[in-house]
Image 1 (cartoon, rainbow, N blue to C red):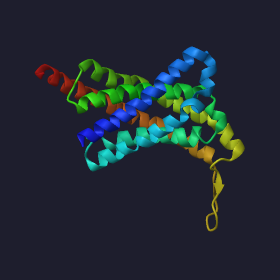
Image 2: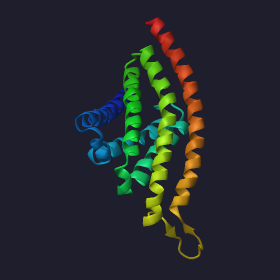
Image 3: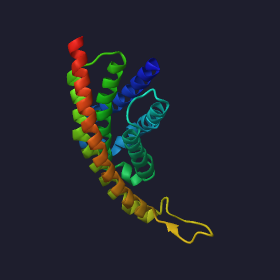
Image 4: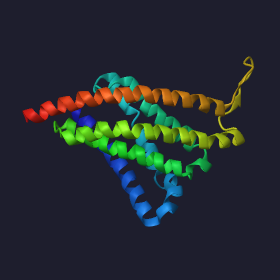
Length: 219
């Protein structure tokens, strides 16, 4: 199981590293013109990485990953909803700068996280990397939530105009589902979940920094 988890982390590290490097090279080459084309250039790999991350929920459920289920579930479902429901369904949103910002934050966090995970699978612990992994999350995760909220706000006019996912339920139901209202309610869930996850990140940071510090002293 440890070898399987290492291979999984390695695959995710390669995917997110490719996306992160691609974004930086494109920006250095084309400047601001590359931002509007971010989704079309790396969207396929981004979708594959996020779909693959669903396995992390299964890892926790079957007990091979000792992470807490609910915070990880919230983080993964947030990305799935924003990427597949909000961004992927509205072509007009895909060219917005907020998509580039969101992808940059996601991949920066994941490159560090999967690097830490891979080394931990091999029993290698570096206190600076541990500190960076958990401290970076505390700083960048709220920024990513703000970017998610902004992406939802940007998408609302298009969902209202095109009626995407809005539907009228058949008899015997007598009401309709207006998807922009669903997204507005989800904004409340998004920011409420952020408070819970930040609290969990603080507790994980203290626990892992203490544990890795002990392991470094022993080694």
